[in-house]
Image (cartoon, rainbow, N blue to C red; front, side):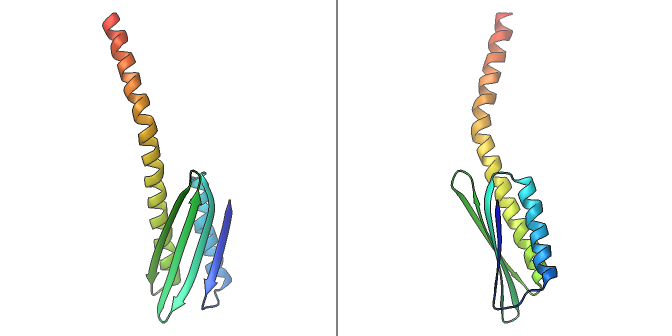
Length: 116
């Protein structure tokens, strides 16, 4: 799992970089199927922009963007957005796979109850 942090148009302090890394590490610990995360931190005039691009298994590519007046708030918001997208993607895959198995188990259970 690779984590890249790119900074544009500003010098970011070590504390901001460590904070971003800590938030991304929590995200990677929860979602094992993530292959690569690229975070881009940028400042344009008075807005602090944070962007995340996630590449996961099964050719899943997710991205999120957030801009606020504070870099820490931008990082928090964008990580929350990408976490929501990842959770939705995982749930969608589990529903598709698990729905058929659940229906099959219910049919088997009904047939055994009828035979008894």
